[in-house]
Image (cartoon, rainbow, N blue to C red; front, side, top):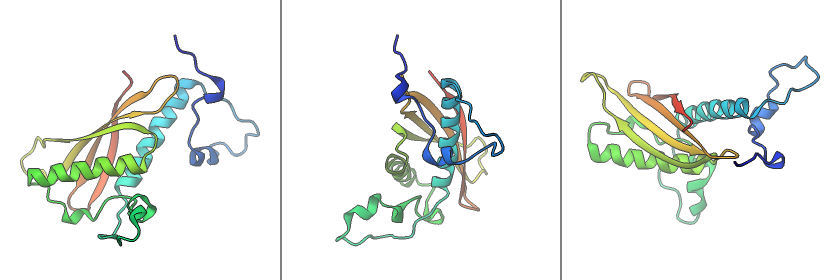
Length: 166
């Protein structure tokens, strides 16, 4: 059985380590591996929601600067008011854009796939999609599944973890 190397121990992100949930307590308790995994999944869900609710407006970056595609200028998604959720080809194109965005801006993902879900109500104008991902975690990668809803009226995305583990 694989053992967790103490030097490669799972750690929260830098941002999460900067937050102090109990500022009046002088000592920090070392959370166990399962607690760290829970915190990691929670922080990824939170960060995913921030990423998917961020918009960029640089439609055609200059050819002289190809690195702009992977920079903070393109952090988030394009304006969602222009996304056609009815046309199947456009939805698949949007799914590939989502996957590309997640691969670039969520480095904790080892792999990621986006699938669209059917609406149970024919008058429902939300776009539902599932994000299946594997996150880097010691000693083994962790599988997570997020259900997400894009509200067409507000262009806001909500993300909810529905499953984790193997």
